[in-house]
Length: 171
Image: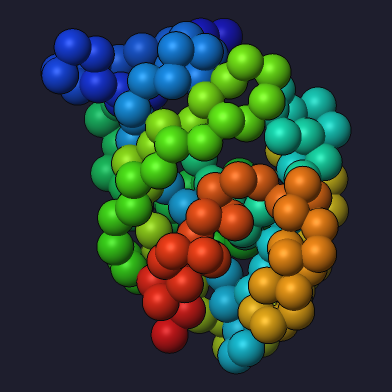
């Protein structure tokens, strides 16, 4: 199945095949969601079968919207599909642009809409095993320490978000 995502080619936003986007490092739209409870956030370990950064830890949910999909709808949809978490509301926290080598000759060059969800309890996810290898709740301070100690265990975008955009990730 060919997945098309919104990417800029020659300055124009157009649907482009997902793998081409990453091979050529084209700037493209993305969504990242942080599911928080108090001083903790939910992180996921990317499934072993993912085509880039398999086994690395990431924020709760990261994805690319479909061509005609609103970022907020995409954030809610992917939380449900990846983690089995259904929410009515996600909070838009801002837009971040970054470029990072994700290995295997692939580049993420994303214009990311950042969303947060504040949960009243630490929900237990029901992850899709094709997407997610594991999940855990972690205190923000401990997450920052773990990233500093073992940066290669975490996806580049999470490291960038925490280093440069921490104020967007939780209330």
